Image 1 (cartoon, one colour):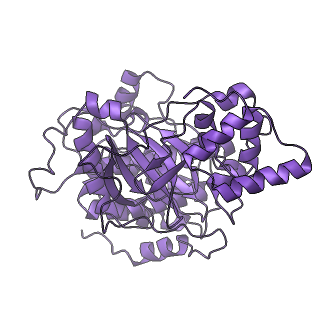
Image 2: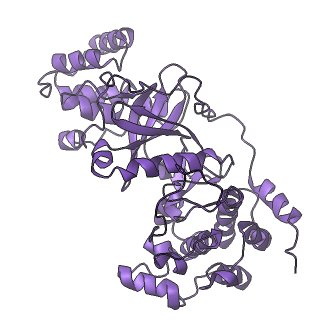
Image 3: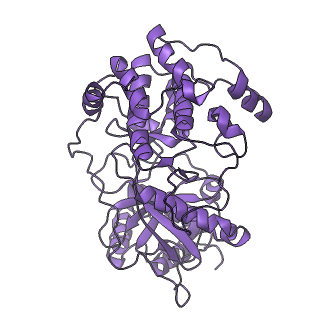
Length: 434
């Protein structure tokens, strides 16, 4: 459909989309008619509906382009875009019946058609995530197909990643940095026990949530290290160079090299370096120079107490056998530096959400349209999928009996602090056998 030219056409699109119930729409119109401030143009009307919590920014942008479909995938309604990576798009979504919010990771149809191996990798990620259930790891709950699109249902983490927090706050105090790494090490130990290697540990894949807990994201390039794999689980060739150059272990830069959990420990060490210094050790260099740096160069020491820097140096040892051999050993080494609780991100430090996206009873929803120009409101990416009925034989949503994401805790729901648990765990760890 063409873009709406007036408020009446915009309201007609809203009605066709099913995003707003007839009663809520009538109440909205009655309220603003009584005030005498009913917008007559599509963009001002869209901004007013966002501010009143009827629609989200993502939904408004699509409606202003004349799109009234594509807001639902399976049993979920898309609220906002959360991020885009090389192989997927991530959206905040809400279960249409139960009302809880989740993150939907979507494999673009164009990528699936162009690179069929991407579908196999997407399912491998889901299988890897299904083996994990730990407070310091973002859980995946389901994978399914909607029309020609494959999607994964995951925890929605209300928080900010460590990269963005450092960009806002600057380098972390040493004890806070050590505690963030301890949280991640606890999650990595669970990954290690499941015979997995993450292979892309970096600040951008570590989220500090609103309860002060660090959680590991993105198992998209995880490696299964167990030899007990079925034919459909084992990758044909999974020894390429994968990961992020700024945080890549030396052995990961060699195609065909064996990689194990010690590569994740190196990447976690580089993440600690970033938290202490505000930059990765070789981030100003070219890609080739970064790889050489990780293999052969010793970076300048970041600020921090000497004892903590000793831990960092061992985590970033060039040879795997010289590093800590398990994440539990890292956790034990960090014990003297742990604080009992990390300060969660402030509202200003978290990605902004409109009222409709944040949900009722939360303090996250805020006015993101006050200074938004018409051009900015119209700036958008194409809608990722069409909400029309899937082709015959394709699933319309999560299969019967599928395990769905648990509802998010309300903002005022007590959540147990994880730091004391980490301290207790470190205290109980047995010394490695000599």
